[in-house]
Length: 346
Figure 1: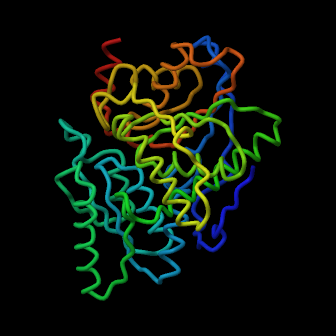
Figure 2: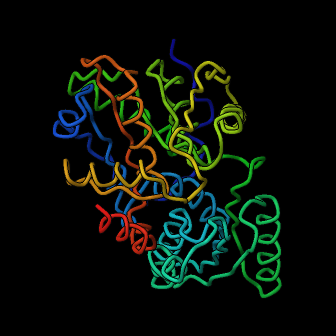
């Protein structure tokens, strides 16, 4: 059954992402793992400031910002946040100022982590950088961002705030409602059947948007969310709640049920943004077998989760599995000391 997407067409949208992104086969990796047929959706190629999934999400946030006449964009995220870097790029492209707030989410970071990767790009993109000490206080981070916005208002600016904590309209998730339809169109064109899509599950905007978009257009393709931000028992209800928020935003029924929300936290420990052996191995394997560059925080852990599922016998060898590459490669350089140490140890 195909569901109505409600008020979807009523939302403004900025032109930021290069789409459609390709779907490519990964035969070398599949052969190496001795498992199912593997494909990758290359959302690392969306174009905006080295690409990534956030370009799709920002189209809807920036569409609203422009329609409101905003002249400065505000966003909060981890020190190496891809969303923050992409937002700074979107603001530059649309001739807006940008204030970014970087949260200390990852323990025991070194000097490279604090200045390289996405942090360096934020500076190149002209963003004004603020700091927030508690990476686990989502509501507090958003409140502090609100204070910065109020200061800017007092200076005569028109700020637009992208909130990342729950409870705000999930405009960014609409980017993956669109992506779901894009994927289905591509599969229909090539005559490819996909048995599962594997995706990072963090803020939930990508995971929930994709899941909602598939179900709203009648597709029952399972979506496996690999936890990168929190444990599975915490993540699953957040994904379902985000789907409820999407349905409220679109003023339509929620076509996602609790049984549709499947998450796996096997690759998550020891925590957000913290490397583990399997993630490093997954990054090395994707690079050496397919020339595919993954990142330590999101896609590396998703690939590690996918490899674990293959080795655990979760799929028949004839299955077709689609890995959603959400980008994030700039963060590799922030983890250079630890990655180099691991490579030398080999």
